[in-house]
Length: 532
Image 1 (cartoon, rainbow, N blue to C red):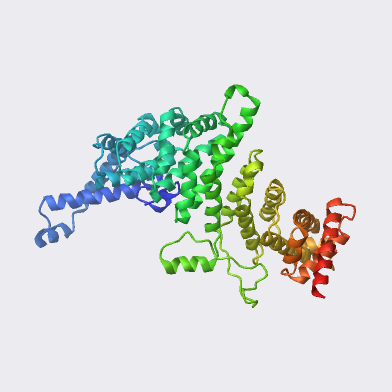
Image 2 (image 1 turned 90 degrees about the horizontal axis):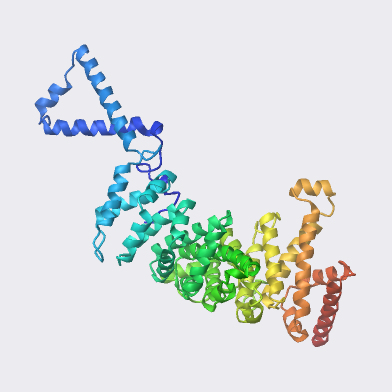
């Protein structure tokens, strides 16, 4: 049972409601229940009494009963308001009683169903800031941490970490939590527990904590950074989650949490460079570890698997660690026959999260010396993005999201020194030809007509097409001629002709474009010579 900040919308019985919205309905329900109990207690369940109770009553008696009912309702309303948490309809007494029951839970004993149900209700209630304030006033964090440390029940872990995650939406909770290094260390150690449901909630805690750093609470990031550095297995454990999990939900939650952690701790690294007194462990030593780097790539590849791979998973019943099915960029199988390209269905948030993480890691100075080990995997991931962009309605019309993808791709490739990869180059060429062809298809339109059709100026398409062209040129001059001679023959001839024409006419005074044009001429001459 996974709870989050939207869970109250799915549970109307315990969702956050105001006194004015729900009072009458709740009072009527309770009044009806009380009358039913009274009826049973008084023995009016037999047929004779039912007949008497249903007989017409004198008008004056009816009015007196209505007045009494109104008085009872008003009294009940006052009691409910007195017990309510702030302006909500949540019971303060119920929450405090549940906390008391949790404190009385014997160490290393199984969680009772009644307490589990009550804790889940408090978990749902914790979406309310007023409930969080009440919990903090009653030392709920300390109670949660003690209960976790004295239990081995992963279901209890899930509920309490989920509750803590909702609480961390409030900065006051994060400040109290961060004030105790032993609490942070306990949360870091929990990443070794391989229970999927609990880990999803733990990743939410990491993400919510770091969200407050971006809003101006940099000191929180420093304290967490210190704990990440002190607990040597922290980054490795996150990497193991990404490598070993078969849950797409957990992989996405973990990637989002890692993105938030790296982005926040990178800010600390910058401050550390400017303030030597901090004497923090270098960012690269804390996070640039093999398990994390490989885990990020492996998780992304799984989340970006195509329909054929997903169907294979469903047939097997269990998701394996095998590499996803890859498709030739030209749509040609091993026998040389055309085939349909399996569709990649992917949440765009997955792509942006991966690009953010990758950008942070590859731009580290230390990464330049060790990134060769991970470069092939990164290029494979970038190829998946390029394949995704070539699907219908993913690249065109060109919007802010697509521009960010292309910009991040170019930046990552520059950090990798424009490493040449056949599949990445072929699919990048496919993206460029799509942009270029789109521009040429509408050359008969004047500027105003183009903007009216596309809602974007022609210059935007031209600028992005040229950026991709320069990236292709960088990769092309990076590769050795024999390799290019082999690979160019397997790329669609029309795309190669468009590439050559663009290199010949675009920015003729650009040294990079000139070098790429010369290199392409040499390659095509050798290909022609071999053909003879």
